[in-house]
Structures are given as C-alpha cells and as structure tokens.
Image (cartoon, rainbow, N blue to C red; front, side, top):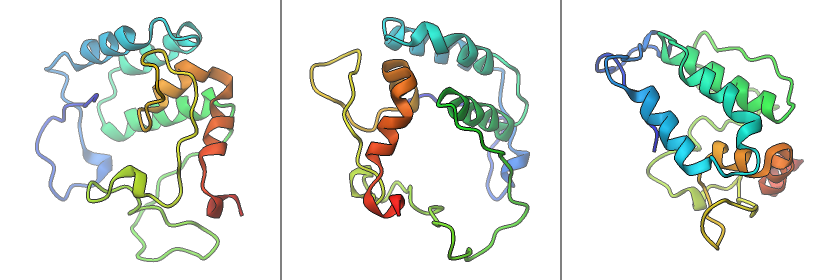
Amino acid sequence: MLVVPLSEKHGKVPLKDIRIDYTKKWQNNHWRGIQSAYAKAPYFEYYSDELKQIIFSDYQLLIDLNHALLSFCLRSMNIERELSETVSYEKSVNEDFYDLRSAITPKAAYSERPYYKPAPYYQVFGSAFAENLSFVDLLFSAGPGSLAILKTSQKEFLNK
C-alpha cells in the first residue's frame, strides 16, 4: 500500500488544508515500488512518465495531489470531465445522483459493495486474477482497455 505522509495530525480539518510531509522519502519509495511491480507490464512505458511526474511534483496540499492523480486516471481512460470540489457538506443529495460518499468503509469488505464486481483482466504477476488491487495495476496491465473493464465491472444499478 502506498501512503502519503502528512505534515501533522489532522482531526477535524478541512481536506483543503491537509499538508504533505516531504521530510520523508515517500516519493522515491512509491516510485520504486511501482517500478518493481509493473516495469514489465504491457503498458508501463506508455503511462509511467506522466505518473512519475505527478508523484515527484511537490504538491504542498494533499487535495492538489489527489486532484492531479484523479485527472491522470481520467485522462488515461480518455474521459473528459470537469472536476470541482464542493464548498460545503450536504446531508442529502438530489435524486438524480448516486450518493456513494459512505460506500467505501473499512467496516465492510470490498466484495460486499453493491455497485462493483471486478471483471478479470490479464495481470503481470500470478496465475489467478487478483481482485481489488489498484487503478495503476489495471492501467499498466490493460492500457486503453481499462475503461471497458471498469464498465464491465459495474453492477446493474449503475448502468440504468
């Protein structure tokens, strides 16, 4: 698991104020781990330079790093979306939206989630498909086919 160290403990602090700690060598550790796992993946060379550039950029705020990584993921799948952040928390949302804010929780296994069942794809290591790895695994393994695999993985209620 790749973890970005934070500059201080963050209790009830807005996400926009959480700072990244660069006193640790997390960028090097992350990149070496990614290289070690995926250098032989079919699409590593195609996507790795851009991902490496994001990892080694000195974003001061965690939200900026998250935004850059999310933008990379969307670009890699040729999805054009305008990203924006909410300015306040709303307890309920319009019926036209799926409210998945509490869908990912450590209290429930990913296999129990009602909206996603990973579709198998070729992976670099192992003989059996390993579910629930990461977007990096999917992208470096499937490249341009990543979006089709994600769409196949959606459970029925999201396809309505």
